[in-house]
Image (cartoon, rainbow, N blue to C red; front, side, top):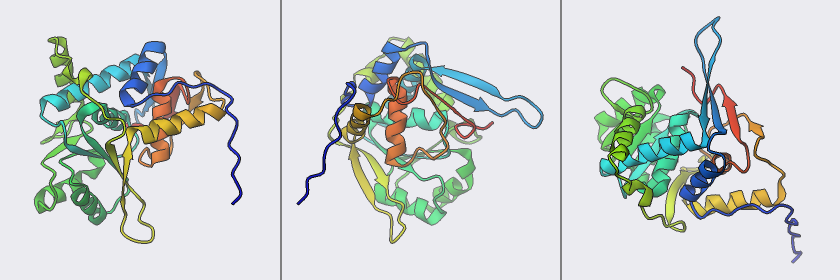
Length: 269
């Protein structure tokens, strides 16, 4: 059998065991640099507003949200996320991975039947959703066919708790001296992500991923690709596929790739 030649290592990246190490690295090394630049549309004829989120700022947002999740008793739960690319999606994803439980990222384009099936088969306890999925969420609440007991909107929405409010809850808790979330144990080799396949030929399957599955990909890419701090990337594809999650993680460690993301799809308001 012919042996496949390995690519020669060119660069010397830093290996991170888990998401917490990755976020802490970027926040410590480049605290005041932009990690994300988010475009907020203001309506026809008006110039958009660009929100700059630093590496340290994003890390704090994750800490605050994760602290609220812990205070609400979500540790050990399976938390599903569905919605378009936006900062709240990213905050939720990393807040879960930094010690809370198992994250279940779902394709924003799933028909209702597949969304219901994925939530039931993954045994999700919480669903964090973009308001564009409100109709599906109402159907899920009425059907009672899943284990989901809490529905959290990514932005203020009547009748639902929301990510900005949870973030403020966590900030208040941390300001009182509570740092429990920062010290939660993380098993980097345990299953912390359930990622569904596209299901093009049959029913989608849940792939079990550990944090080292993601961070090892990041480390391998950085060995051979000259992607530097200061590069800028635009995010158009959904963050749900594992390749996009690896790219997202690269972005937020600050080393590579990239140091900033500009995209109208991250959030449109």
